[in-house]
Image (cartoon, rainbow, N blue to C red; front, side, top):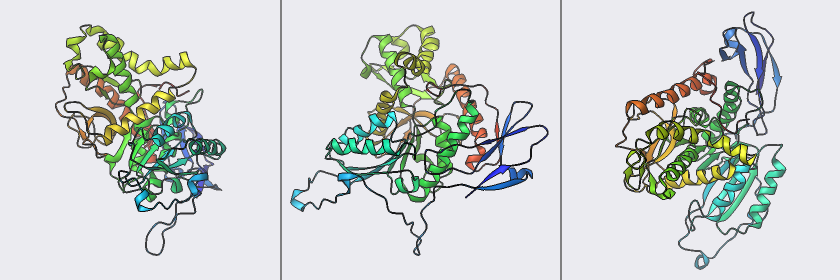
Length: 444
C-alpha cells in the first residue's frame, strides 16, 4: 500500500505528516494534519484538497487472501515450544467436564499489563477451571524477543488449561478465529504530545486492528479495548469492523469502577463487597463521572450511609479521577497490575450472571440507550449480563440534574473526540476542537 507525502503547503496552514509505528510489522497510510491560525485541527486526505502528493512505498501488514471458495486463507502461523505438540488423548482420558477450546487474542502482549493478565487467563481464574484456552499474542518487531520470553514463561508454568500459544506481529494472523480480543497495546503519550495527536496515532492502530478482526476473527468475537484513549479507540475499531456487531465492543472503565468502590468503602468504613450498583459514566478521562446517586452500600443508597454531600460531590470524584496519577507518583509506574485485575473483572462480568439488582460499568456503543446520551459514541454505562458474554443496559437508573450536567460534559468530550478521528471511521475529514486537554494518568 502506498503512503502519501504532501508537497504543497497551504498559505494559511502548516502541514505536518502524522505517522506512527503501529506496534505491528506495518504502517498505515500517512494521515495529514493542518495546523491553522485558529488552533483548530483538520485531518484530511490531501487528494480531496487538490494537494500534490508523491508516492512512497511502505511495508504493510497484509490481510490473508480469499481462496477460490471465498474463504479467507491464513499464512502459516508458528506455535511456540511445547504448545506445538498435538496431544491425542484417548476418550477415557479426557476430562469430561472440560469445555471446547476458546481462542483469546491479546495485543500489547509483551507489556506490563499483559505480564499480569496472561497468567490469570492461563490459570483458569478468568474463564473457569474447566475451560481450556489458546492464547494468540500480538507484539511488534521491537518487542518480539520479549514476546518470546513471555511465551517461555507460560511454557514453564505448566498450566494444564493452556493448550496453545502463538506469537506474532501481524494482526491478521494473531486474530484468526478469535473469540475474545483484548486490545491492550497502544502508544503512550510522550512529552509535548497533545491529546489530538494521541487520538490520531493510536486511532490508526485500532483502525488496522478493527479491519483485521473484521477479516479473520469469529463473527461473534467480544472485543475489549484497553489502550488509551480507550472509548474513542473502541469506536474506531468497531467502525472498521462492520461485520461484527457493534454491541460486541467494549472500552475498559472497570478500573475506574473498582477505584470508586474502594473510595466509598473507605469513607463508609465497610469492606469492598458491601458496595454495589457503582456506575462510571462517560469517557475514561478526567471527565468521567463516578455515580454516587445510584450506588449502594450494604443495600442502602450511598447518601443514606455517607452524609457528607460535599465530599461526595467534590472530593470523591476527584479521588477517582486522579487515582492513577497519584499511584504513578508513589510507585513510579502506571497501574499495570490493577488494570489487569480490572480486565479480569470486566470479562467475568460478561460470562457470569449479574447478581439480582446489581450492575457493572463498561464502555459500550450508545445506539438505542435509554439514558438520553448521544448516539454513535462509546460511553461507559451501567450494564447487566445473563453470563452469556452479552449484556443489557441496566434499568431503574436515576439521573438527576446534578448527574446529568456531569454526564453531558463527558458526552461533549467524546463527541469532540469523534470529530477528531472522522478520517479513521469513514466519516470524512476530521476536525479537532477538543474542549480541553483532559490528560489521563500514565499518558506521558
